[in-house]
Amino acid sequence: MNIMTKKVNKSVFTRLITLAILIILMIVLSILSPQFLTYDNVLNVLRQVTFVIITGSAATLLMITGNMDLSVGSIVAFSGVISAVLATKDVPIFLAGVVGVLVGILLGILNGFLVTKLNVTCVIATLGTMYVARGLSYIVTDGKSINSGLPKGFETIGRSMVAGFPIAVLIAIIILLVFYFLESKTLFGKYSFAVGGNKNAATLSGIKSNRIVWILYALTGTMAGLSGVIMASRLGAGDPNVGNGFEFDCIVAIVLGGTSVSGGSGSVIGMALGAMIVGFLSNGLNLIGVGSFYQTVFKGIILVGAVVLDSLMKKKLK
Image 1: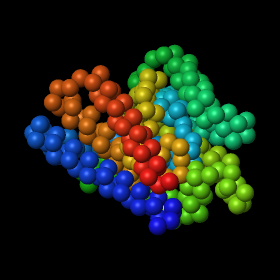
Image 2: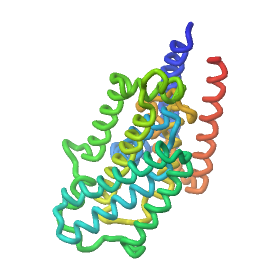
Image 3: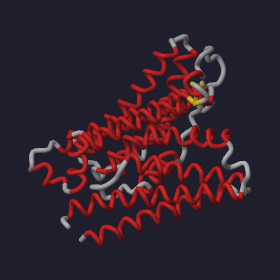
């Protein structure tokens, strides 16, 4: 069995394990809490993980190349704040949302420039952008939530339903499918895996590795910006404090879904399963009375455990 076949088998096996964990978790939590598997509660969890799935769809491909983005939480806040502020200035809601997404795109492009052109390590580059975007969020709002003067209809995309299903969740599903197509059916996806597997070899084979990485940073910023606009709509406010720890939730979901932190392997479907595990776990722990501080501990354990498991499986491939 060659190394490529082993990697494919590992990816499928990881997704099956992740799915099994999700099913077992839901069975256990439904036993512990009668409210857990109710329609309203499940819908609530889906709303909560929507933003992780939207942003994580692009961030997964980025991590497959061996890079990561720590600025997504701050981009979510800044994009949401910008769209809310513009809406209060009588800018049409759709245009305000577009500008909010453009903010995310520009910050993503900045991250890509720092990493690919200035050779700043991805952690330092995106950490810097994280602080800049968060600081700008506070400057624009003077540290206050923008929740008055918003026009009627601002909350539509974040709260409206279609056939009993939230529009935001439908958007997340569409985006997930688009990135699954990019990952599995296009040369762009194939090149992303090649860059993460061995960037030097990929470059020598004619792949424009830096261009791939730069595009993925721009796409990650775009998805974070879109998440910020939808989140502001759902909250009915542009809050500079939202998104704290959001980058951590994305990383946990991505790694739990089988994406290697060192690049070369991963799956957006696995990320979505990982996001649902984290979402349902947090929700279930809330229902049975476990405090939020303990939930943070659980997330940390899950992240470390997933990285250790990935490391062990990589050793078996050698």
